[in-house]
Length: 136
Image (cartoon, rainbow, N blue to C red; front, side, top):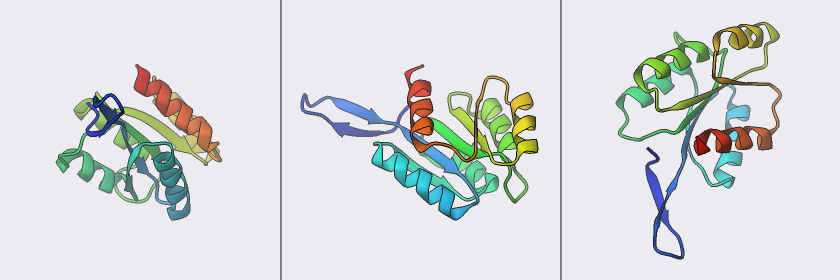
């Protein structure tokens, strides 16, 4: 399912995982996106759930992981986005994040098998969670 490729020393194609980061707080989004790029992932950024839905529904790009905030402006929050992905693009793994205790508690109840990372999160923890999901 991974879409971009590089060539290693054996001339074999090695897929590069693609992660969508969905976060309305610009500084948080930029920090996690740059960190994940430095870890070797292709990263696509979305500023809210509506933009993420548009990218997922209409892009020719394949995504492996969506890392999304739960609470965002617009008509689609992170939980709704995760539910849409589960219905329409079940091959994509979802990691939810929230800094609001009430939203985090609701996400824990609703996220089922999805992972939840509470803010503030450790960047290396997010990377390791992504890598574990990619190994599935």
